[in-house]
Image (cartoon, rainbow, N blue to C red; front, side, top):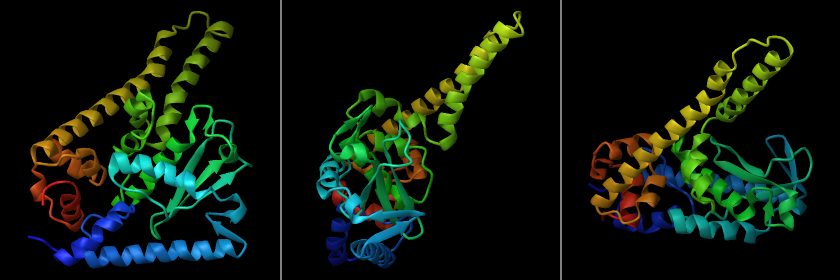
Length: 289
């Protein structure tokens, strides 16, 4: 049974294409109200910026440091092809101070207000590449995070979806290894433990066995690989399930799904059982009518 009228359903796909997705359990009126609130927040920020400077999360930002619209449009072509949306309302800004050598950019946002923005190193103002970073890929990656903020969870599949924007097969395959903040720290920490073991052996304890340090160094990377493999298997099963139920673009559907829904699809739960507004909109755009 539909929860929205055919007339309402004509309006909602345009919001979906613009990167506004209904949150889990949200009604059509709640969804529209939230979108109006988000647009008002972005509009207020834009007015403040045009008057000189705007501040967010302790950062003072100016119009002179804004990222050109064409950079975001270029990345939007990637997200449109992969996931059927193009975000135009999220602003971006170049940073030239206080950034590390290996930092390329990031997105910061407030889940309560729905506001978010890009921060990217100023090198990308005139260059499309820096070290391993590609400007278009970097923006597309962060646009994926911006769109999925409404799902309200620290998803185990989050980086998988974002890294599919990459031109590198290696990053597309293994990008989802680093899901939590501490994953990278633990990954590097094992190498430092191995280094510590070598130092102890050379300078203090010549008879110290080194193999326990190798186990400690390799244990967490091995765990990350296993976790990534398990997540990819679940996604693949869910994708096949959607194809069997008439969804010809399963990746676009999964991008809008919660972790629990993805896991249920992989376990054989038919998508017809998902009844909220988000799934009505998914069926309207990508499959079952």
